[in-house]
Image (cartoon, rainbow over all chains, first blue to last red; front, top):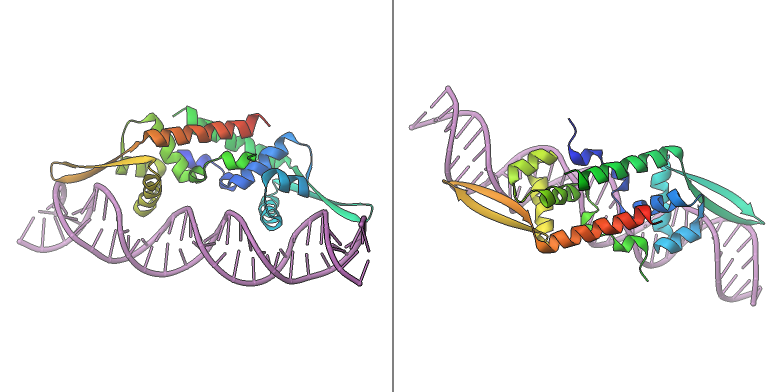
Length: 98
Length: 98
DNA sequence: AAAAAGTGCTTTGTAATACAAAGTTATATA
DNA sequence: TATATAACTTTGTATTACAAAGCACTTTTT
């Protein structure tokens, strides 16, 4: 039988990743710079958290050219959405249902 | 102006500490061994997380003798309850209100 | 009475984060 | 030509998280 904290997804312990996911759940697409500004992160910090979420296939990274300039946008994957919603459910269970 | 993740309390990022707090919010008192079993932790790991919460004055530690045996029980402090509820509010804001 | 087990830690050691800052490649603009 | 922007990667450091072992003491078992 699982204890209450095992149901929480370790990937979402971190506040930055919680922030990224919650932004991506309500925004179809968010690009590197908007994310960076909304969460007030350094480039490297954002890149590394995104990379962690990408490795788990929770976030999809799209790279395109706008003219000759690169543009990177992020989307949540179906798996990521599911994982996040499960995490929220586990959180709610933890917080309200004893 | 604060960004959304700054409102989350860093002390509650961790799943073990989230678990401890949520148990203490619905139980007047919980002793060392019950906490340990409910969260399935090693002695040292529980002790260190409790100590972190104690340092923040979020948890009160009561040591007493039951016969000649020591017994340690934990309670959430008023400050801790406040901090935790604020954290939950911030979480809800993050998760539901965009 | 000796050995084993339990209470509640602390210490030790290791591995995994988290993060800032600087460096990088390439394009863009003044 | 010099500066700026985009999107990283690298480097280095400091902080966690955790298991396992050790410890002092008491209690239970044999």
